[in-house]
Length: 265
Image 1 (spheres, rainbow, N blue to C red):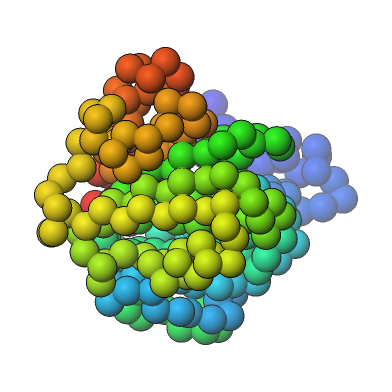
Image 2 (cartoon, rainbow, N blue to C red):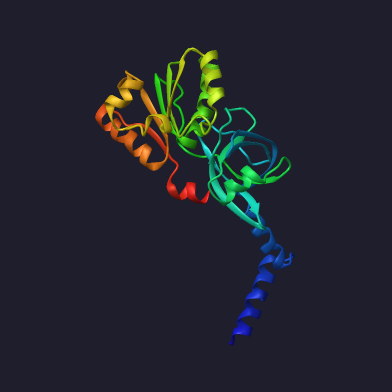
């Protein structure tokens, strides 16, 4: 049997197996089901956080599930006629309107920061990730660098209103005040909730923070050894915090914003 005969045989078999439907309708149905892992959303509002960072608020269609503070989701956008997916941490509190906070560092993030507008369609996969708080958290130390603040901001926005006196220290490393995402809101949260103590470290003024050095971290948070530590940021920063954990005797919970993600976001 030649190739054309094999094709005719397979088509005939498909017709028998799919009767009374045309086999092409099953192919179309399969194609639709293969896309069922994502849902569509729509941008409702864009708020500029810094000159190169925005928060995009969006509504989500059926299939989206509420996120836990600290989780991330893959977001797809159409750029020059091509759909491109990137992972972004969700910055909104639990039960709030979902949002992502994006710094312009690549194709998708440049589009979201400089060209996206309310009404634009987003493609959304379900939230995932284990960078989350336990149900009954102890005293906390958050160590973040750059846009690593985004999942931690979701945690703070969720935790502090529920537990206004909860003991939490935030060490936030940024290049300068202008590039420090959520700077003013963090101060407002600290004024409102006395359990939160933010410590800002601006590298243009003070140089690099050695996050692996117990002495350097201890100067900012003297009881850091007694706290559950959460770290998020570039790989080198998170690796340093992990080294600190080895000295302190307990491993931090970490989320890495690696170079590949930053370069292609």
